[in-house]
Image (cartoon, rainbow, N blue to C red; front, top):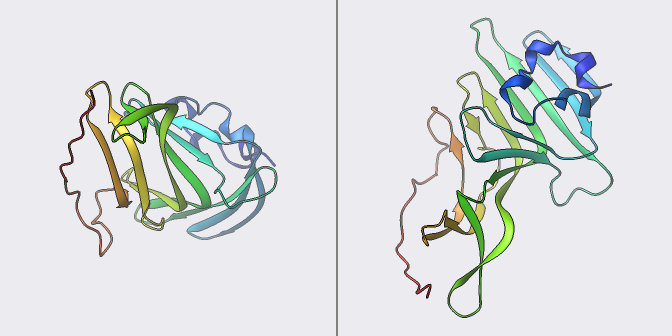
Length: 193
């Protein structure tokens, strides 16, 4: 059953998300469970779902299948919890979420084999797998996702190239998970002549 038939329209403010129109018609509920303060859905879609977040120019959130998932379509879960105090959270489970930047912000690069970098021609994206939680303060938590490698990217047309290993994302006002470190800058200069 399409989510548009299961959920009231006000739960998905599609006018707030570029690319969000029709999402509830493209994602199907294949099972559900509801109890006071908690609802869980088993979801399925034929293709990735991409939309831009309000107030975040140049960044697209793409929900898709983890690389180890086989078969047609994308199956994942959603858990919605709410309390009498007005607080709520939405957790998407068992999927891949790719943060994809516009090419004028971050340009995907690769090692050119000669000590420099070359453009890949592909959009720059970072894929996180596992669980993604959106909370009532509009914080995004990727705390249940394993760390990722940030492949080389040039910042716009600056010539500055960044990359990093063992990165965890935390876009929330809540304290970061234990054992995480703040971003540290390591200088590495390569001639880009």
